[in-house]
Image (tube, rainbow, N blue to C red; front, side):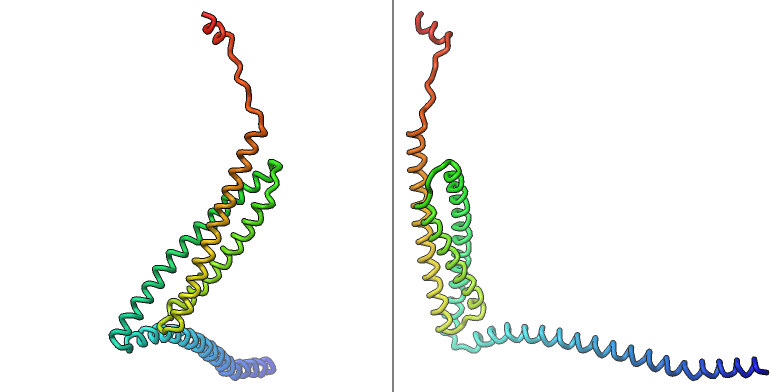
Length: 207
């Protein structure tokens, strides 16, 4: 009888606990779904916000007067083309300075005093860094630029880049000139090997 009573109590406990466990499980599942929905909503809001920014720019252009709209599109296209041109020139200038630096390093190892050249290279590298900074700034502006103030700002940055690239070109030319001079002086200081005639050649001349 005691066994039956114990079994009855155990069964009663199990029966009573099942709804509680089911309720807890359902609650956890609901919370998980709610969190998932919140994350999805956040992502959708971000995507929608980004889409609205692009649409706003296009809509602003579309709302302009026909003549002004045409001018804005023309300037935007011009900025894009000019940006790509300067991007390539800056990349090539960086490659050139890298190659020149390698030659300077070799000259230093050969015992040549490169103090003057180092000054030119320091200036050229600083100008290259400035040009890259201004190009990055233009990149942040060009896609959303539709007003005169922004276009003028971009134009000023292009002018600064052009000025920096000219300075890099001049510094690079000076570095190349100095390296050539060092090479010429090195050739003068280095004795050229004397050509010795072979016995066969001497015999041929005697004949």
